[in-house]
Amino acid sequence: MNHFDVKVLWVYIVLLLIGGLIGFLKAKSKVSLVSSSVFAALLILTTLRDVFEPGFALGLANVTLVVLLLVFAVRLGRTKKFMPGGLILVATVVVLALLNLKFR
Image 1: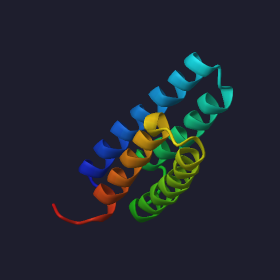
Image 2 (image 1 turned 135 degrees about the vertical axis):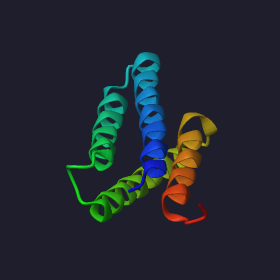
Image 3 (image 1 turned 60 degrees about the vertical axis):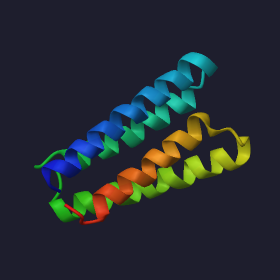
Image 4 (image 1 turned 180 degrees about the horizontal axis):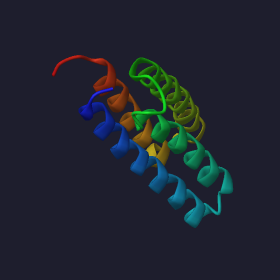
C-alpha cells in the first residue's frame, strides 16, 4: 500500500472508532464498541509496513471493508435510518473506491 492508501485507511479507522464509542455512550452498546475496535485493529495491522506484505495488506483491508459494507448495509436495511449505519456505509464505499481505483 502507498502513503495515500494508508492515510485514507487511518481516517476511516478514526471514524469507525468514534462511531463505536458513540454507539456505546448513547445506546450502551458494548457490541458496537467491541466490533468497531476489532475491525479497527485489523485495519491498523494492514497499515503497518512490517506486519504484512503490501499486496496481502491491501487484500486484507479490502476483505475487512467488504465485511463492514455488508454489516452496515444490513443495519441500514433493518433500521431504515441513515444515521449512523448509512453514513458509515457511504464512507466504506468511498474508502473501497479510493483504495482500488487507480486515478492518481
